[in-house]
Image (tube, rainbow, N blue to C red; front, side, top):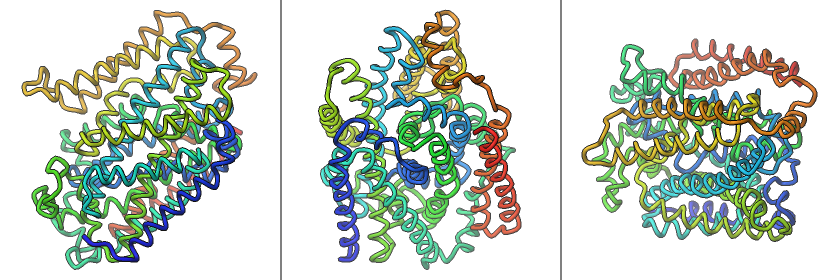
Length: 575
């Protein structure tokens, strides 16, 4: 397809703005690691919350959602909607604790909570395991989406896309630090919301679609619009609703939805002005991420069923694209090719921004682990602030290179999602309990990490065999991994000694002061349920307004208002 002059002006202007932001904040961000990785801990909740949302809007996210819609229907999104429970747990139980800890990265928690060489080993190992290995897998998935978008929109090869996109994001990530990431995230979020909503309105009113009513009444689309699976069909109900809500949300570690908080979500909580800003930022993130943002992607995914009813039609539309890349997640960028000049430039800009936002966050977050939890902790404790920033910038470049290389061997956005779920299966409950159960120790975490990885590797290899050793559905693989891993780390916990008493006392004094660990739990639990119900009702209310079910939509909106009142009361009672 051909981009107009106005499209190119919009796209190039965006690149220039982002590079300028990175260079403007470079001097202040580069003075020491605290400025580079935490922006001096003075960030307001609204900027942090928007940044969390922008980061989780990766270039692969709309592709992933559209692919889920085409394969399973709207209710297929429960595989990630279920993580709302994890997010609300962080809002009401952990956001204040993270900010109160005063640490630089969430991995520093290990030597705050645990004692001995095992704690140091755990911190160093996870710095590389999460900051490098996991991070590269996540970024590779995002790069895969960029490859597909780049081919559909620009006719570029995989190598051309990566050679153009990677240097720009590395420049402003390496120079601007977290503050540069936060500021560009804010711009990206605005562009993304405007572009996705505008694009949805245009696509729905295309002659091929004929408006929202005609779209929803088309039999092939109507079969995909339900927000809940058919309760009489266990083959859908169990993997897409019961397992995610009953098992997955509390048991699985997944970036952006870590049980108990962690990763780049924790990084932003640690960068907040105070505990209240950390809490409100996380609450806003969960509302916007699960309720506000998904519907434009859902509607475009539904519309794609009419225009591209099967994979063969997608392949025919893009004959030069490697057939391995022609999956259902290609439908989203394929639909964007129908957009007019100007709007096309805005939407492409939003997707480029999404790519850059997510990659820059993961680069900054991963390099914070490499610097703070590996280099300074184990190699050069006397490293100056400028030296730490330099190491962070070098690690940023190296991780980007490996992520781009890995992206060339992936095929579909859902592959990476499922792989990350399986690797983290069974570790979630440990991250929830470690703040409160004193018996949990480094060996508990090491056991959980090793067992879950071995199980995930077994099922991954088994699935690639011509004659698999075992034939188990993916959702039962997840449940089995959770059960085995959880039993394993609990047994290790009970069979090993807890950390030293002085370490535990110091940790409890810092985090809980002289108060009980369980103070205000009743109101926190009430706020948790109000948050979960409120966000889900917001999600369903928006959907029902779109579907034309106004009475139900207004009823759900009334429930949202009640939940909002309860949440505010919960905050007031637990301050």
